[in-house]
Length: 304
Image (cartoon, rainbow, N blue to C red; front, side, top):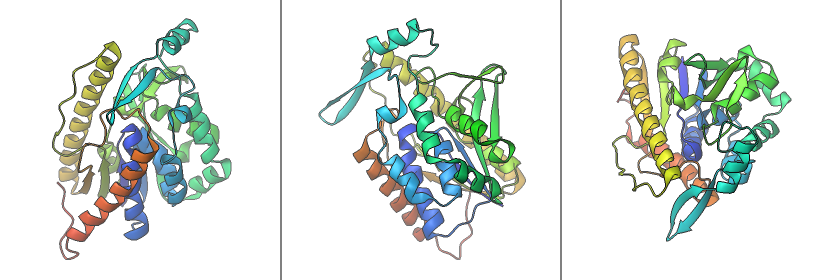
């Protein structure tokens, strides 16, 4: 049983899309399980249906307005470097309205529903392969995995959206009496879950470099401090997920093929830039091609 696992990573998901395109279209790999977290959850439904061109079009054209109906930050570009600062008006207005978060991401919910139709969802349900997304249940303090096989259209689209809601910058969702947020808060790289579901070979796309290559810039304001803190926490969660995944794979005789980003793509994955994301998609495709052509077909796949 073969699984494709895609980690969280916001706008860096474009790189994962390029990797998946090569594996599915060029290497002709057939997956029994597609499982994603956050941005990975956005990709897996289209990838399972082999609608690669459609998801590429979405990822290479998405903007802040596509995601946020209330954007909590301003983006400034100076000498090619993007920095963010708090949008005081939007944040205060949102809090005065009774929201528990700085921003709202209902536009993303609309985007998801506009590109995964009920007809497409029906096709997903009929696939032999399973499609699973990761969410964090803050009320019960646990990570949950939602399979397309277990829900109707409305519910599953909600779970895909919830998986991407990077609180407190995006919407906190109350569902079934519990508060839910981005799956990455609990499981950035759900390799362990893929193996638990029976995967013996896992292709894992990790939207970080394998070796730390980044010293974060000093925080410019309270908002950038908060984003730096969350990035640090998610990096630690990702590191632990990979370590546990390797341990479980070793004990279950499973193989993991890792696809890390070869370079640091961005220091703020909540910034969506068309030119950069188009470039990252191509980089992902080229990297997967290079990695597979460098490996002799006579050699067994290796877990790193």
